[in-house]
Length: 400
Image 1 (cartoon, rainbow, N blue to C red):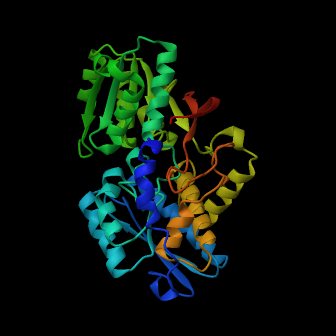
Image 2: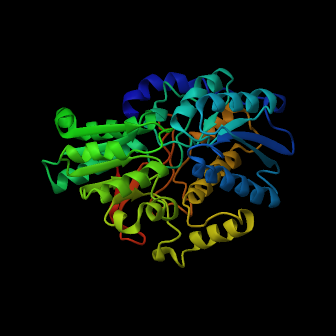
Image 3: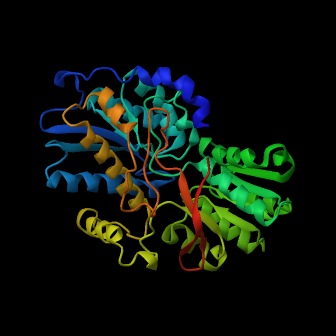
């Protein structure tokens, strides 16, 4: 996918790397401050994801207490969009036109980032470390001023699930519950990448809307398909429903769970720990609850940060791990910019990350970007739920 867009994208990218602007042209920047903005679902159907924003606000508070970045404090303006794309557009316009932020950082949602992308391009505002694993944001021709988040793409994840299932049973039949938007469709695309011409004959799909109260009827329908592999491409609330309902009706296929919904406290426990036992997923970050990391310096540093700067947070929620990683990645980009915080230099540095190791990524996973590669992370490791926690197994895998 990256190579397919590379040649067409080179022209788009090259126009971004013009000579640095003067200080007067550096939007959102003063000698003592850089303003950045984001939208987060602090309310609405996926308010659990608001933890990402809370963690990022805490991280920049910590940095500012230490003197900021290159002598400038980071003013992160984090606004609620209720997980509604029209509200994302409204709040993003406010951030750009009223607050005059230098960049948009880590805004959550596939449809939401899609809705604001063209507007941000027209205003020459970078859209960095998007809070979505949708592979479309790696299309440089379409999104020349964006980088994907510090997470493995959904489409890559689905490819790994298909390959794993077929290795166990070449004649596997798949059932998929997916959110009816670009987030869910990315998982279907990943399965199709692997299954090819067989896709239509071996995949039964059902979708849900984010406003739906329940997906019980869809799960009953999927069981009736006779599938022996079940892919749950859902956000936390619906993932918990899918796990619980399939268990209640006695359906025990090989089950794969989207790695955005693997939290024990908000998904596995509400679904029922017994119901989730044996479910497979993937990881790219360290799980603070995993005993393997008990004495890990990175996890200890994360816990110290959380205790001091996000004291009200649930430290079992890996959203806060993702927020830590994303904020660190942006910190590295802004540090590399030095005193030139023009749009052109911010983008140049965002596309020049080399082997950046973050303390809460799994060992061996490094952040890399280039002018023709806007996917910071493309590796994952399989893991299985044992009824209490997730156990990782096997080598690092890439889904590209």
